Image 1 (spheres, rainbow, N blue to C red):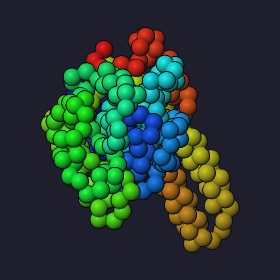
Image 2: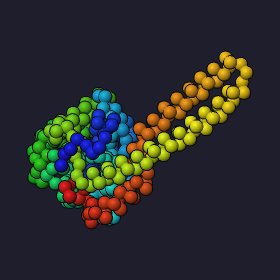
Image 3: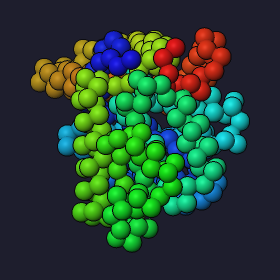
Image 4: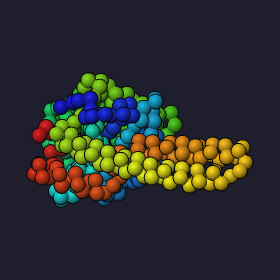
Length: 314
């Protein structure tokens, strides 16, 4: 189901969260770098996955924060289910309370049986509600040698044409080697499409009970961290004030007393500012902890035996 969020969404109201999925070698990491406009993910054309765990990168586009999560080849047919489940939990943590779009990356070229199986495996994870948030991205546009995609599609296998038809107008073609104006143009095309998908879904993001369960746990951990930061600040302020006031009392010059008191107040204000920033970044701290992934993985597995059906309503 789509919803505007769970609890207070603070600055994330303006954030666009995207998840890249696809078979190893499809070009997910390069696509993520293209979207972000920088090299956030290690990318190389290889049959073996370079990305071993889910990674997150962010940048700003048209005044909005763009957060992209790159996934390893967890949906390859040969990947063990246990590895898939833990990285799915990792994906949930990094995109909580839910992604605005899921980007299925497929490389243009021979559409092998292995690739068809991988795509089919991925699509079985998405129910009809979740598929409304999906965008199909074809990489390797540079290999078309100037041929228009619709002309290429006419000569493509029927199963490939069926895949495009399933996504209707929610697809685009990328050249991940592009630079300058070409790179920015295809970045704008995709992110405009992401915003259109979000509008079509009421301006919200995709979520279900798994994401909601994870978000409750994340919010709990955020609150614990914020309370610890505040308690730490109050101890520091109390200690600083006691030490400073004692030193100030020993001063005989009234002007110097005022100056030292002003310095103390400035230091206290600066530590308060740092505290606020740390509290605002508590979510990032929670998401970066490996223990967060493990606790949420165990929590989800305790409720659902198969968390590989991430993008289905439970």
